[in-house]
Image 1 (tube, rainbow, N blue to C red):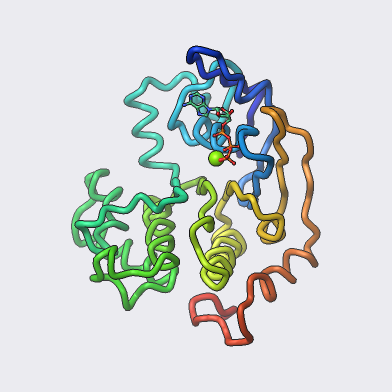
Image 2 (tube, rainbow, N blue to C red; image 1 turned 120 degrees about the vertical axis):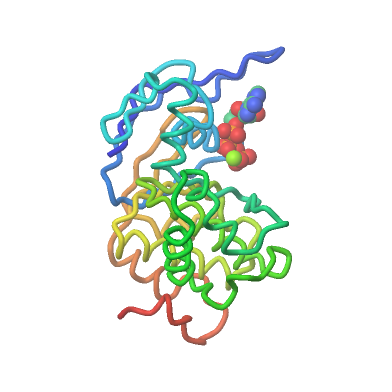
Length: 251
Ligand SMILES: Nc1ncnc2c1ncn2[C@@H]1O[C@H](COP(=O)(O)OP(=O)(O)OP(=O)(O)O)[C@@H](O)[C@H]1O
Ligand SMILES: [Mg+2]
């Protein structure tokens, strides 16, 4: 459960920018939430505060009951590594490493034994449909495959919350569909809590709920109808009638 109360963030440059002006909401575990709003409305800022990548100016963030303001910098980094996953628009993968090495990196940092982190990351790479790409270098993967490695890496620590900032921005239609269907299935099948920033109204139909920001404020809390969601899952971002890869099929 995420509980945000009166969250404010001001960037103090030459001219202070009030990027978040007092935002409050709750997100139960297992919900897939889209965050939408015009450019500059504070979407990335909100995600950065929730993912403990930055410190808010005031207000409270509770992640599963933990008041994140009470964490020292070291504890916050540890909490992030153990419990949170972040997918960036630009993938942010390490190009010198191959796909599975990128995926297991967080587990290595957590000190897990090699045999164990290979097992866990191999399993997750198969969930995102990359079993046959484990030893490819990042530069040998398509954009959609790279973003799926980034998703595997974000989830490999069994993250309580997956944050994704415009994860489909650099993808073509087919790969957008693949990534969005994957996120929907992670939520449905594993109960993964997901917060995804997006610009495209069509993408929000894959989510359970949409938080709309404008000018640093929460202006609308929309829930997505189950029928709309299911239609998106089956028909959204289709380029042709070809069937889904195996890992996206219901079984
Ligand atoms: N590090 C920073 N220093 C100063 N101002 C910032 C900083 N980061 C963001 N801002 C400002 O805060 C406001 C909110 O930015 P934010 O990046 O959260 O918007 P966004 O909704 O994610 O926009 P976009 O859709 O373009 O990604 C903007 O006016 C932006 O210029
Ligand atoms: Mg942004």
